[in-house]
Amino acid sequence: MTNYTKKFFSEPLSFMQKYAIAPPNDVAGDRGSTGTDIDTTGFASHLNTNAAGSVPKSVRYARMMRDHKVAYAKLWKDRQMGGKSGAEQEGIGVLRFDADYADDGSRKPIWFLPWDASTAIVRLTIPPKGTTAEDPDIFFTAAINGCSVFFQGSQANPTIYHAGGNTGQSDHNEGARFWREALRKHMANSASARAKGDIVAEVNKTQYVKMPGTKGNSSTAQAEEYERMLKAKLDKAGKFTVTMVNPWGCVMGIRTGTLWTFYLQENATVICSIVTKQGVQTRYYARPMSIRTIFPGSSAIASMRMKVPVKVT
Image 1 (cartoon, one colour):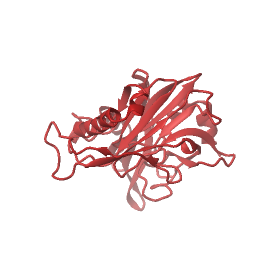
Image 2: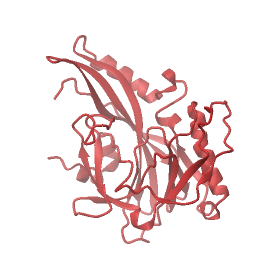
Image 3: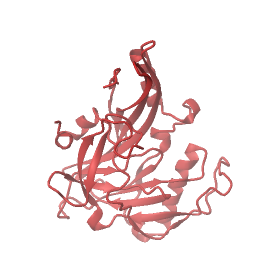
Image 4: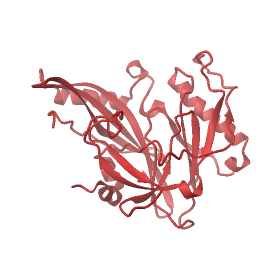
């Protein structure tokens, strides 16, 4: 049996060029310790895309406390539709976490930042190397499918924010701006937040899942290119058809020496129709499309062209 945890930790970037990773929303139900809510009643869309009464009046702000900044995780390959819960949509072949805040000897430590679906910004600050007892060199946040992730401060002592939930915006640019302005408002009202430095990088839905200018503004250029390539190479008349490619993302970080580099893995759920003796079946497969640096700088690391199975196994 393949030890995916060992393979990932030995060569993280090479691993992520081969496997799509979907970290969980949270570990053991912890979504941070609640601070002062952020008042968002003053948000006004530039494009008048506010649905009546739908813009949140406030956003929950939370931070990960010291004893729950580091989780212990091992990776496993999901070989069934829907995952363990039956409701997961990333697809067959995705790598998932088995994670907890207790070390059972089979897991590896990671810095982990959860997501709170209730409309919230959750924060995690990674202390400088060598200042904590448990000091891993890998960071993950929950898988992203419309959320924004912000980076603040320096490579040696970064703060990361995961912002997600309902923004009340039908325009994707305005949805991203909602989170940007909510975080700016929090920083304006918090001296301790300002002391952590400037916001130096951002990932939002227009970059990895809802890019303006794509079909229906509901895909990305990378996903559309990937879909065209798969259809050209894999479609087999009467047997196998690629019907859709849905993009989503994974944000992770690697510390080399004392400095962090953060990456966006752009993934795809490839939806296929397969003709079998039992009739036409729909299958979802998870595949990575590309990985690129977010902070510092922004550059492509690799583009993947992972083949999708054309048989039901």
